[in-house]
Image (cartoon, rainbow, N blue to C red; front, top):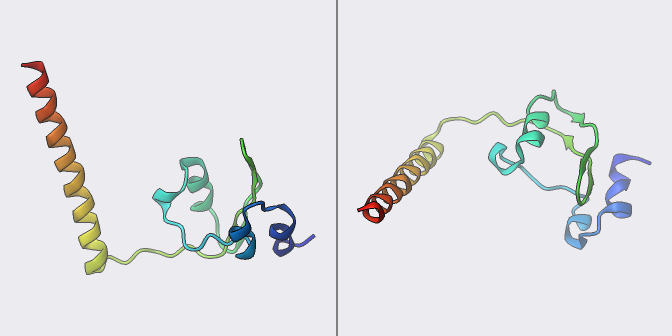
Length: 101
């Protein structure tokens, strides 16, 4: 059985099955750490060994690793994420300070 035949036979999710199991471009932070480590350690194109999970088995074909380029949009996203994290931390610290007094 070829890799391309697997979705029709084994994927229960109708929409994912229609897409042939293709999840599209995935970012490192969108993946669980153990999957991310395996994916980003490959030399594409490469089929990873099966990953056993509670809901079944995942087969991952890494077609390409897209290297990020620090353009204006990515720079803005990074700064925005950092600021949001800093602001959340400040609010939590202030809340904890007020609760302890």
